[in-house]
Length: 340
Ligand code: KG4
Ligand code: ZN
Image (cartoon, rainbow, N blue to C red; front, side, top):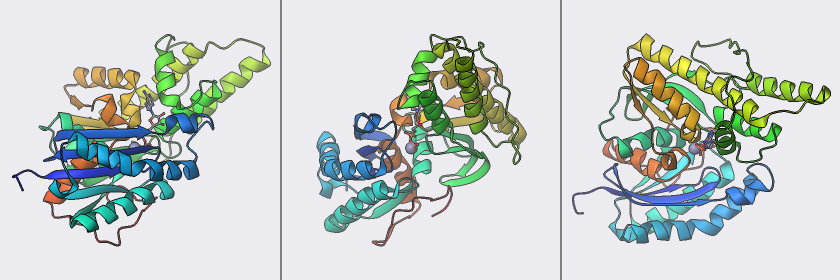
């Protein structure tokens, strides 16, 4: 009760167990992330059952550390926020059950947060001057959306992927060219040594909204390229192939984003999600925005991939709007953007 709103936020929708304390939606008092990546690497991807178990093992520790780092106790917080969807149901349930238990015990309000709303809200941390309306581009492992953020937590969806999400395409292509998991960062790294114009992939046609994306055709094109090279006993330059794939993804994302910004006369563009940490995408969007008089917002890489700070940032605006979840809050694995 010091005039500030301090929110303890919890995130466990996939393979990161995370907790953070965020003050007034903008100031990060603590940010703790326990990544399970090493455990899942052996299997080449996230194993949902293992993810849930690891969340259970680590969640208390992660929350306690977030409070300790912030120099606070549970009783000092103003609300408990938690991601309740979309994500892996077992993984989400761990965070939701934990948040409900501690909010109830400490008599604090509970706020269920949409994971994608969280990703977008990561931008507010380093850019408090970003206010709706603006164009939002969400590129994560499970989602690819181009939206107009009309107001806090009010989204108008312009386009989405009709098949694989951008991060999913990175992960699948990385596996195909033998880079392993997690694919995105590995393709990003090796692309720096490759020629992005070495292999030309044709742009996929999408039947749907002109802002929609399709990445599975591109993934198949990479697989075909590999198969043909193998049949001809030709050696594949993995760096060139990765760089060419990455360029194709960056080009289509920049093209659709620019079109939407022009069509709707929007000058501010905010990017979010794990793929937003891709150096090629950051550079491509930067050039595109500079050349067209748009202002680009991208969180630091640590706030692009899953974390709880972004959940605390989103929860602050929900808190201010009066959103409170009941003790019947449940995990909703298929929660759609804009749904409550
Ligand atoms: O947002 P996120 O942490 O989790 C989801 O909500 O899905 O995104 C994870 C995705 C993974 O597919 C990962 O390969 C991708 O983001 N990713 C990247 C990079 N870092 C993470 N993709 C491309 N380049 C990167 N540097
Ligand atoms: Zn995410």
